[in-house]
Length: 375
Ligand SMILES: *[C@@H]1O[C@H](CO)[C@@H](O)[C@H](O)[C@H]1NC(C)=O
Ligand SMILES: *[C@@H]1O[C@H](CO)[C@@H](O)[C@H](O)[C@H]1NC(C)=O
Ligand SMILES: *[C@@H]1O[C@H](CO)[C@@H](O)[C@H](O)[C@H]1NC(C)=O
Ligand SMILES: *[C@@H]1O[C@H](CO)[C@@H](O)[C@H](O)[C@H]1NC(C)=O
Ligand SMILES: *[C@@H]1O[C@H](CO)[C@@H](O)[C@H](O)[C@H]1NC(C)=O
Image 1: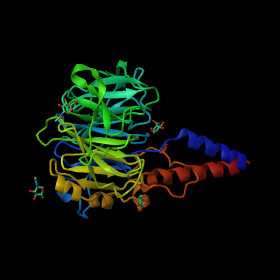
Image 2: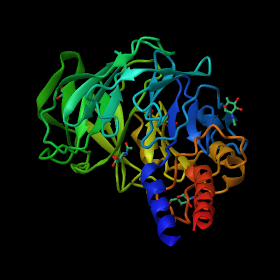
Image 3: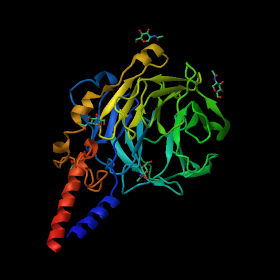
Image 4: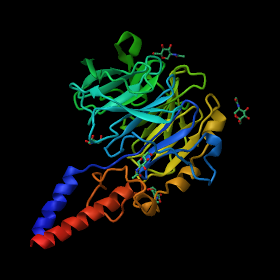
């Protein structure tokens, strides 16, 4: 029985992946959290985040189950639409579209071709609404038109060209001024980025330096990046870079070619994801805690004094630790039973996946009784 159980556990743990929620903004700067404790939430604009009144449940039909690993969300500011990649383990190449005005979901079929959706970095270009992604050493593009709902014609990831970067480079890809900035490219010095000029499909041969005012540099290391939007719907000019060790928050300005160092995230989490709006940088940690750093473009004194704070209305709606009752109650049964925590024996199930882990325990329990029955 023991062996049988071990075998079953192995099967379960290898066949499942960790579900991941994602955070984003709509074009009116409402903070949205998808797949957090099995539901989707609208936390409203920044002035309401410190409220203890729970964020609004916007879980709607035709949503993706948010049961895949490494889910990513992108805002199309023109279309006021959110595009999600890796949100449905059963339709892994599809892009789900959330129409933020209509609060409705649809699934856009996408032919992946040679694009590897399990290993890529991507940005959604502001002006063209085209995704650019680096995957397995090649630059791909996916033209979203101005879709705010799925089209019946499948779209295609197009393999545009080989990138001039060493094989094995794990992309850290940020967008500003229609230029893709690649950080942590091997042999590029700390504090510099390699650039791809979107409108000319041109890999600039020389790296661009973005020094801090004291002459120091951001580190040449893996991390997370996200671009600040402009309220007037023009191109992004700045992006945040948070090294994987969460040791600082760097804001790179591609107009002035400078970098500011702001407060490091309070929660150090190498698996945290980030999304910037116009006046805030938001962090989602792997246990579902959401925090933000207020930001005022061009106001260095305010920015250097800013500190991270909790998005309280999301914590009220989808608490990181006490979510088991709500997410295992069956009212969030849209979450599929195939996601799991990182390890079957884990007693520290993270809040964001607690619902899944409860389902997981039920599965394991069933396996145990089956095993007992068989033996
Ligand atoms: C799944 O989501 C839909 C849309 O919100 C909802 O109507 C339905 O009740 C949900 N199902 C469960 C089991 O929660
Ligand atoms: C998720 O991302 C991690 C880190 O990049 C990677 O190792 C893993 O293969 C990805 N998993 C899937 C299923 O895409
Ligand atoms: C910043 O760098 C870009 C790209 O190298 C360059 O075109 C631009 O002139 C620089 N701007 C300033 C203010 O130095
Ligand atoms: C920076 O922001 C503070 C607080 O909002 C404001 O009082 C100050 O005038 C701003 N400074 C600049 C240069 O915009
Ligand atoms: C989530 O993780 C952070 C950082 O590791 C930790 O401070 C916090 O207590 C955790 N929250 C819960 C509810 O486990």
